[in-house]
Length: 123
Image 1 (cartoon, rainbow, N blue to C red):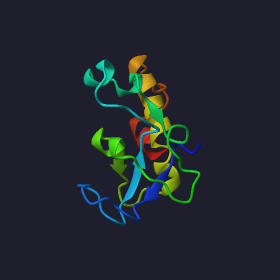
Image 2 (cartoon, helix red, strand yellow):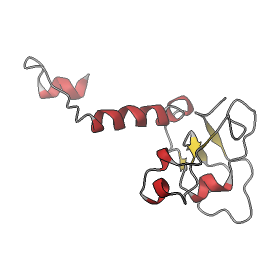
Image 3 (tube, rainbow, N blue to C red):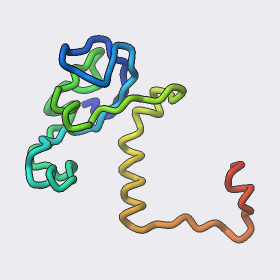
């Protein structure tokens, strides 16, 4: 297991661009192939060869994780902005699922009539 994690780059391959030792990163829970019909359509979550971290590859429960080159090639690794706590960054993927579901369902936040616009931003 350990498919939702964040970490700090400790070593980096010779041909890796855009990342450096010391960068904090988070990655998608699964790695798509980047080449199947679904990946080419922009739907990597439906990839025919989806390989989950923690199942197809050693995951974040280990002290060190080797992120497969395919994850970098397919854009599944993202730098964590400064100031974002590691525990929050690790929740980026489950949060993205929730946001995607709300957008797909065309869910809109209804603000109660008694709640002012100022209350909305101060809560």
